[in-house]
Image (cartoon, rainbow over all chains, first blue to last red; front, side, top):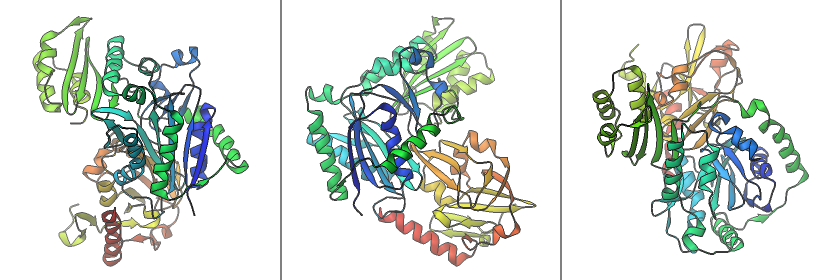
Length: 334
Length: 150
């Protein structure tokens, strides 16, 4: 049976999420392309609302959704084209290995960037980059009996707002997060200047057709609509939104694959470190607001290894269990 | 208790201690091991290796239904589900593994996920729970072939 194409134009914000969940629950293999005029935040399944500045979001009318698939927190708005691939987990065209799944279904997206003149490439786990700058983020997972890939093509991106909706440890952290997003993320507008959104969509669909064969144009049926409304009750319920996740995560913010900003307090000392490709590229250490230049110098440029960081922290700080915890946070499992 | 070499099946690089059963249904790749009046459930070496580093794990059910999802697990930004090999009641969740799911990658047969009270004695007598060397080898070889095709 042919994979269906749902070219849905602009949709209300929550429907942009509900539609691919509904199709997956109903076992309908499809490519969905769509946009929204509204701005909202989408959390990965293991994120929690505690990671968001809910007061700011409420006062600015920015809602949030907790999707059933993976990936991190994303800010979505009218300057993005969303794509969702829904395939049966047991279909012959569905890879078993996660890496193969991403490579296969991100290939049409890469081809789209290439046709637009950008040398995009896949960076595991699931980023698409131009040079070293992320141009598309993706999340995926199993919903019902279908594997789902969800991502977006960034026409433009509001980094200031992205840094604002997150609940972050302090303003130094927030400012650095924004700087890093400027440096590590890019968009079609920044790369191309001008482009046609409808042309981008046309190329994207064409490239997915090269992968799947001819896609069968489809519209939302009453059955799909019913499923969306049924799921809306679940996904917007306090039980779902507040389900336990990985916990409050003001301590590590992922900017792009290989680039993290971490916050590690040790008593009155606060360390903010940028971990980039396994090295500490930037460090800000303060005690009661005063810079600790010597500690910053010792850590900057060091490899993000737990043992090395622990040794440096032990030389500069009075030992306590929180020193070990700080070293673990800064090293990030290395 | 350390098993002797002949009590561990090796299929290519994957090891399968034969003191437990392996759930083939839904290609779940979970093991179940009787321990007194209860049973432990965990992830086998094939899944632990092919999924990559597990970042998050959460238990989503209080009661297990055979073949139904009871946990979410995330690796490489992909959320998968774990399908229960048996029906029963969850008695205990291994919090150490919930806090650090990478223990499963490091040591899949030590890092159990839940301890259960089986719904009945027949739970461990199902055909899709394998402990037979030949059947287990055939299944894992099939699974390896699927991966290699990709």
